[in-house]
Each structure stands twice: as structure tokens, then as C-alpha cells.
Image (cartoon, rainbow, N blue to C red; front, top):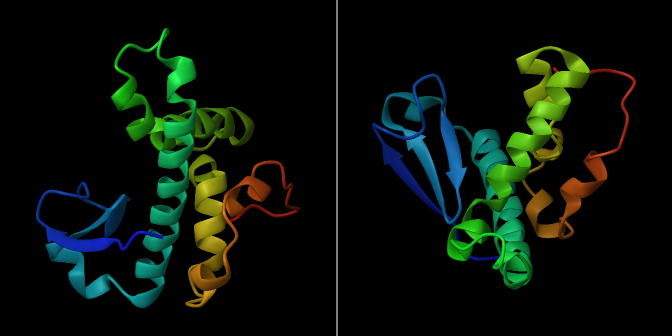
Length: 142
């Protein structure tokens, strides 16, 4: 996996958030830096791994979508966020709550379930988030 660089910023992520991953960077709000702990760092690095996978998946499929999407270079850059947004809308329809929809997105479920395991990225399989897509839980991740 390509090294992810942590950048402390006053702009990204938006107010109310501590950090956000935009592979190959993780942006941490300067005013929330004290709250950026190892679990948050691990959570964001899990997202960076997911985004890197989706980036390369986009590269593979871009030639097939080029006739439809002329701005092909942008397609593979945003595929993670397109998937994230569509899944959020589907989950919103299922759960009826923005918070519950967010916490049940496959990318978030993987990251939240493993953010306290600081060794997770060493043993994580590629596309591990896929198993969280259809995996039904008896309880909502809160």
C-alpha cells in the first residue's frame, strides 16, 4: 500500500469532523488535533486503503466507461465517493436515519469495527469492506 501522508489543516475536513481521508492524504483539523488519537488514525488509514483499492478498480474499468463518461480521468478519482454516496442513500432508505445510514455504510462498518486493532492493516485482505455490504447484523452499529 502506498504511504498516506497526514496533513493538519484549518479547512479540511469540514467543521464538526476530526479527520478525513482523501487518498493519498489524511486531513486533520488543526483545532481538533488533540483528539486525533491512534484509533482515529487507524480508522482513516483503513479508509485510505479502501480508497486506494477503489482508485485502482476505477483505473481498470475506466476504458469501458470512456464512451459514456468523457471525463474518464475524473471517474477513477471519485469512484469511492460515488459508491459511498449511493450506499448512503440506500442505507438511508433502509434505516430512515442519517446517522444510522452513515454508520452502516460498508466502508464505515469495516473502519469502525477495526479501528481499535492497530495491527489490522497488516493482515487486512484487499476489498475486505465487501463482506460488510450484505452482512446483516442483529444490532445496529452505533
